[in-house]
Length: 598
Image (cartoon, rainbow, N blue to C red; front, side, top):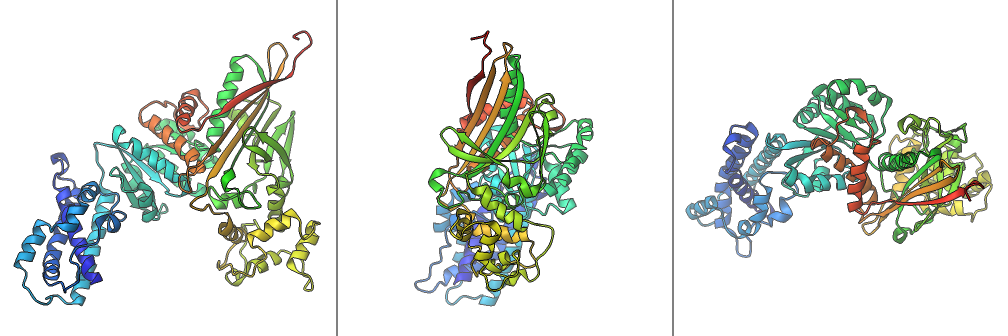
């Protein structure tokens, strides 16, 4: 009966798909994808007609011959099809009324027991699945020349808001949005059946498939892991396609500047949250200070992705709101900055020991630790004469001291594999980094090494994570960093009812023409909607989407490898972000006033 219902469902679906594809514009009728879609649907209808007629005419008493609802069965696999709106609009009639083909077949079908046995039904269902795949491929390969095409690589955690933004504007702007991911279901889940969205199953390592997608694009967006970006950048240069990404400019990408200029394209980088919004707010304030003919003496920038107060329910006061791997490996490259004219360097094993306490109005107290290489932004912001330039990451107080335990033990190391890791327990994992003392407990050895008591806040945080439990890890041939990430994801993942929070703080000191010294602060707190439309996804995705729309509409004229530090980019982006509640507050106070000015 289940097989019969599946066949009825497929038969009815293909019939409606066939009809939905009939009003194809004459100008497009010659295109092979459209032709393939129509003929595949027609063939499926023909193949299934005799089978479903036989089934429907001979259903046993109490058995339903009505297919299961379309909305529950078909919307996900075909969420991108050009026919989905027509199919969804006729859900009720499809479930209750046989198609013309069904009606004619049923009328002519003999009565009595089914004439097709179960094996034959299963064979036909396999054929339907094959046709189903053909339809999916035809839709994925279809390109409408009347629309501008956006190709997005990556449908991960931070893509949800970006995809929603692009699809929201797609009708007015006449866009087609192609979402390519190694997981087709991930792309479909983000598109949610929008008629202008097309999910594409794609392995970005597949050169031909990747280039085929880039060729279709008027603009490319990449939310891929950093190590995969350069391949897409190279494709865009080769095929003269504009590109947008939220990731840092790598040395490889930076070297492509001249080639991009020669191709008359823009490769816009660092246009997410951090980097991204931090650049734009920084330059807005720096340009404001310069407009007063004042001399900038210090610039410090901090940002953090944390949990909102209402979801702050664990001793770490932290949960994953972005790529967990990046959190585990944060700081591994060391830190560079300049303070009062002195160059400062912090190696990885000292990063989480050097923190400062910060207060953000309305958000509370935080600790900040230095982040990456701040010195490279002296040229970017044109601050080569500024004595202090420092960029940092924000966490709640106490986080860094506890995280530093993992750093000091070597549990964040990603350079080697642990033997027999799949059979190791969490307790054995942490014990493998401690000295051998068989008569002492793991907790006692760690407390002794750290110089803390067994009931210290640090050990309480570690115990809450389950790091001392005898639970099997189950990861084969894993690095310490991979195992630690696996353990953390069990405890630090957002629940459905959780909300995350983004906090940013920019601190400036500048000297006015009369010698007065002023401290200026620009800060923002933004809370996400849920575990999908997170604050992180919104503050990364919206700037990328807004910038993409500006490029497609010709409002950004820059060419080459670019970051959003020019007024023609940051001003309209920040203005539109305010419409979504992402806005900064600026305050100033005088630190020093010369006696002759008083």
